[in-house]
Length: 318
Image 1 (cartoon, rainbow, N blue to C red):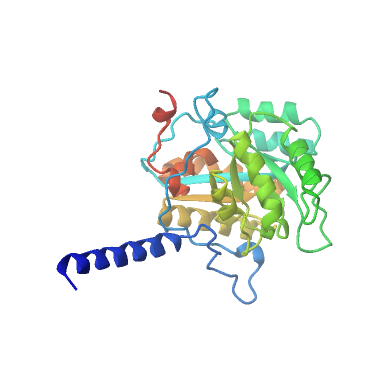
Image 2 (cartoon, rainbow, N blue to C red; image 1 turned 90 degrees about the horizontal axis):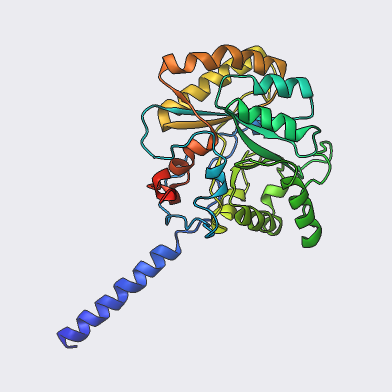
């Protein structure tokens, strides 16, 4: 074989190897960490993903300067410079108990507050939270694995006709305005359903809002599905109060700090229980002296979703 043919053959082999490599970089990677024997599902803490992916092509209609999740953000700066470990506190299940919703909105922030779309007085509650500097999310009801828990009306369920599912999604997302994204309420069954998630992510992509996976199931495929639809996405790291006791909540807050120190940021999810709110009222004011930044969910998206790393707010203000 002539030298030119040998070179051509080697070149083709190299190209085929490269194609095989890039095709193996599949966004549908399953979570690698399962709860250990005897461990509560809510104690499942996945490790941050480090696989490299392409930078996300954000959905930027000509009519707007930046995605809706950035427009509705509480803080204007989206740079990736990590000055201090960042702590994001998300409070779910808001709006059903009016007094607890008001108390939560009065906490020092900025926090990320997720309201159930079937709660009453949502425009008033959410507007007050925004005035207090917090970010908003829709806490989207989804089907759980068991039949003993009711996610509420208009929940997203496996097996619904696409038209019915779309109607439920739109009704939930139209419950109030100015939110940055959604996270799942329950949903351990629905977040494993590819067809239903595709309907959801298509709608979130149209609205330019982010998706936070509450990770109520270690086999959730919500995040990889969101990525395929170019929806900015990440997942929670710590649950604060799935055991409602003062000692457990204090331990969870310590795990929250430790995770932020180790990985640079942490997303912790809690609920408006009296014990949780008591603990947060005492703990939140201590974070600055400890060297942490308390930030809303949008402030960690450009470092959490590695496809959009390197994008700063300046790029959306040109």
